[in-house]
Image (cartoon, rainbow, N blue to C red; front, side, top):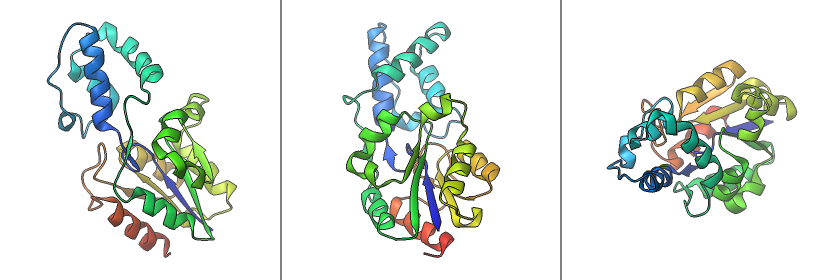
Length: 205
């Protein structure tokens, strides 16, 4: 059994423009404009925090804005699949001894609306709601491996943040970092088709 575990935002879905748009809207509600553009927000270690700071909110407003983000980041801020994501997920779903898993700190609602019909192709999903219940990403990865009876060498986690790399290391699984997402920029995985090939190579599919 092979287990392919994917982060969501920055791996399958590109939401950067929408996140920046949300904070621009909140800035206007507080009476100021911001020149923030999406390219300013990549490669940060704590992305959402950094976007809020760069948008220009005062420190005392940051927690309030983060709370609004959790409750108001809705369908008016679209989540776009990266080119090739639908084909990749469909291809791996069609392999009998492969299981697909999402482990993400994003909300279940965002994962569902971002994936659309692809959501039902995943065998297991861990989201922000599970993390708030004190489950870490590493624990989610380990639970997926254990649930499907895979060896750690037959499981892989794909992410776009240094924290994803650390979670994979803690869980003892193979890690693939993508450089088209939010933070990691030191790999040659620049698009989904290249990622699909690398997963097949790593798991000998």
